[in-house]
Length: 128
Image (tube, rainbow, N blue to C red; front, side, top):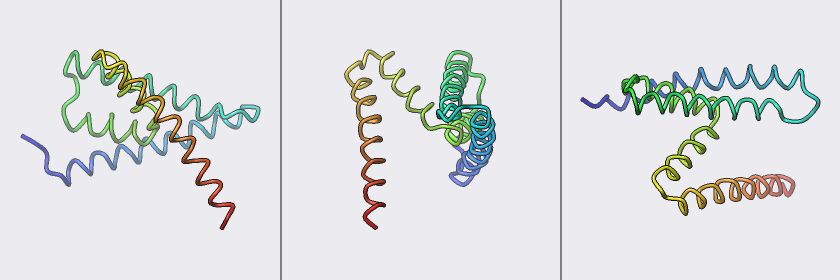
């Protein structure tokens, strides 16, 4: 039986709150001990990638997460913690399905368009 939409949103929203709060705390702590390089973001992204690989893998191979926990942990918590983890997992899933062209295209578009959009936003803000 599928969850009602309001419950799905609740699980994702609660997980997002926890994940965003954890990102803020962890990256802030790492930045305080760093030397100006964005180690906080790096640590968060790598930790999120490891966590989504571990949890999604366990969920797929052992069915250890019910639909509510998948929404809370994978989409909400890790989505709030870092969307880079979702990008990494989706790209690996494409590669594992022998969709190498799609995996490469996803990587190129995500990084290229993301950097381009950030540059355009920054440039646009300077014109205001």
